[in-house]
Length: 140
Image 1 (cartoon, rainbow, N blue to C red):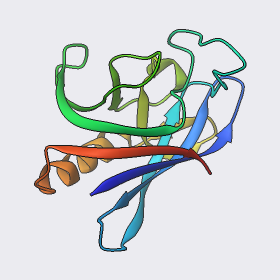
Image 2 (cartoon, rainbow, N blue to C red; image 1 turned 135 degrees about the vertical axis):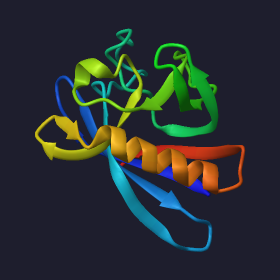
Image 3 (spheres, rainbow, N blue to C red; image 1 turned 120 degrees about the vertical axis):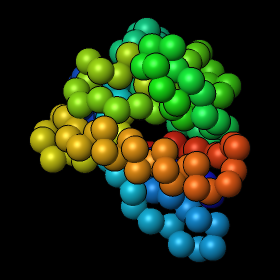
Image 4 (cartoon, rainbow, N blue to C red; image 1 turned 90 degrees about the horizontal axis):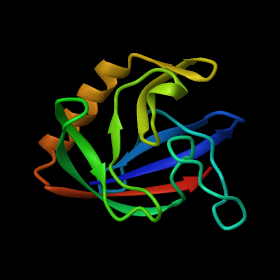
């Protein structure tokens, strides 16, 4: 199973994406929306800590017990210029701290149903039988 986030809306204070799950049988399905910080082209502008979306690329992901959230989260590995990038519940850009939030983008610039969507993602990852996944982030 692989994960794909297509970034689709680039705003001054946030970025919206669509999360897809590829079950590696040609069955790629939309799963949820994502919310992250402002996308910056790090080759031409500096990273602003806790206010910059991670760069496009492919990253390994594994489950990790988050000291901040006190539960298991998907953690991205080897993100250039970033550390401790989690996928976790949250609703507004201020909830990201550089991480990726998951939910439904039913309100402009925000997510709803984040906790339920996060639970569904965790169930899907844990039911896959894998210990590590690949997440690709690309501009849609």
